[in-house]
Length: 442
Image (tube, rainbow, N blue to C red; front, side, top):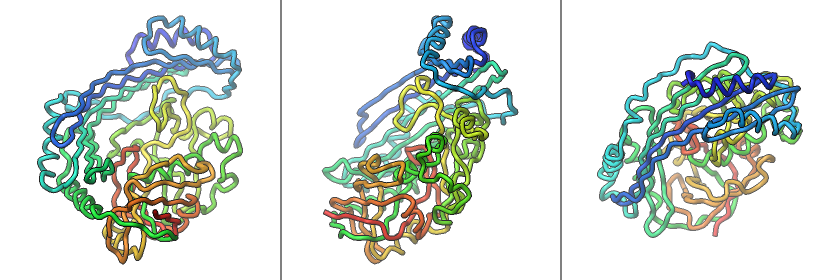
C-alpha cells in the first residue's frame, strides 16, 4: 500500500509549505449477513476510503481530510487555512523505524461471499436447533482494513488487516434481551461447537425470571461488560487527563491503586490479536504497553501530542477514531489503549459461580455512560443479569442495577477467570468477581 503516488504527491505539496507534514490513508472493505431464526434479514457491503493531512509550521498545526483526493493542492490550502485556529503542536512526526513484518495474506477472508457467510451462519443455527426456546440471531461477516502513513521525516509504512466474525445471540422468549458470544478470526472458520454449547447452558440458566434483593453482595462482570469499568480507567490514564490536571490518578504513578489481582495492558503485536498491527495511527511502533501491573499504576497512554506536552516518550497508542465509531480520517489521533487485555487468573467461570453465596452476574448493561466517568463512578442496568444464591444461578433478574466506583470495586477482587474471551468492544478479557458491590432490585 505504501506505493501510492497520490499520497506521495500530496506529501510533496504539503512539505513544501510546512516544516513537517504527514499523510494518512485508510480504506475499509466489509460485507455482512444477518439471520434471525434461519432467515436472512439483512445483507450489506461497504467500501470506505479517505485521506487525512497534518501540517506543522511555526509550531502550529493545520489539518484537512477528504474521501476523494481529487485536488491535493486544495487539501493543502485547507490545512493551511485551519492553522488560523492557532493550535499548538510542539511535536515532530516520527522517522523510519524497524517495524516487524506482518503477514500480507488474508487466507481467503476477502474472497468470502454471501453464500459462504450464509453457510457458516446456518451451521450455527443447525447446531442450536431444538436447544433454544426463543429467537436466535446470527450475524456473519468479514472486513479488511488497509492503513498507510507517509511523512516528511521519511516514514513510509502500511498495514493490511483481514478478519472475519460470527456473532451469536440467544434471545429470551418474548424479549430482545439475550446472551451473546463472538467468534473472531484472521482466517475463515466456524463458530466452535463447544462455545455454542456453553452459550446454550448459560441461556438455559437464565430462563427463570427472578427478583434480586437490594443490598451489597458479590458481583461478577462478564467479559462483554468489562468495558464499563475500563472506560473509567482509560479516561484517567490518558495523557489528556494528566495534561489538564483532572485525573484522579495524578501523583499516583508507581503506587498501588487497585487489587494485586488486576493487570491491564495493550498489545497490538500479540500473535493471537485479530487486529494485529505494528504501528499506531501516527507511525509510532507498537508493543506491549502495561498500564496497571498487579494493581500498581505504571504508565500513561500517550500520543505524540500529549507525550510532548508532558515531556515523555510516545507509547505507540495514538489512534484515530473512538468507541462510538465515525470516519477515521475525520478524527485526530488521541491517546487510546488498543488490543487491551486483562491478565487471566486461575479460576474457572463455574468455580467463580460456585463461590458466590449471594450475588449477581452482569452479562449485559444499560447506561454504561452513566455516572462521573473520569472519577470512576458507574451505575448501570442489568440487561441481562443473573441472580446467584448458594453457588447456583437462580435465574434472570427481572429488573436490577449495580453501582459503585471503579477504584473501590477493583480493590476488592475475589477472583479472576482463567480464560480470555474476545469481546465486541475489541479487547480480550476474563470475567472478574468483585466483593461487596451495591445492587438494587425491583
